[in-house]
Amino acid sequence: MATNSTHEVTGLLQAWGRGEQEALQKLVPLVHRDLRQAARRYMGGERPGHVLQTTALVHETYVRLVGVQKVSWQNRAHFLAMCAKLMRRILTDFARSRGYRKRSGKMNRVTFTDALWAAPQSDTDLAALDAALEKLAAVDERKSRVVEMRFFGGLTVQESAEVLKVSPETVMRDWKMAKVWLLRELNGEGHRGA
Figure (cartoon, one colour):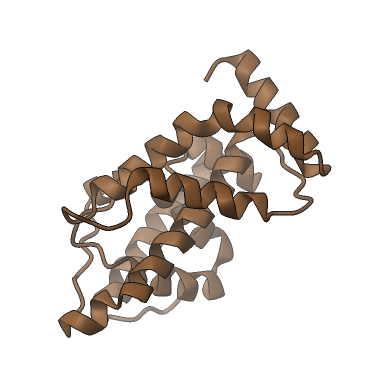
């Protein structure tokens, strides 16, 4: 995204945060591509014939964003982090509502390879991942947010650091520790801390 566009996005986010609804209408075309890329990344990892499509995920994210009131948006990265949280919630809510785990009688194992962290795989059990992230958040909220931003939002280390107001090195440490913690949790090995 060009610098002018980045500044424009930040200005529109701040105006929207002050309650100016017309700012959201101007913002949507500027961030639509970013949201579609994130949604495409998630939906690309889903099984063929998945009911929820990329466009529907983006649309549902917009619908939920409209309900967000008076946020003090920092910048584009902060906005994308919020969208990542919303997409995570939408996908896990959808998975739970469809009862995928209950119907099959077994849970798909989540494999945490470096490739998975770039895009969810089709065997990813989003409900199990969401539950593990909730447990991680209870132990270490920041590590949970790092995973959410990087895995669900596709934010870079630098963008995640900006949102969390920490160094990129801290984000990388949190990222590595969170992956190990989640791997243990999802494999049923438990944990001793984050």
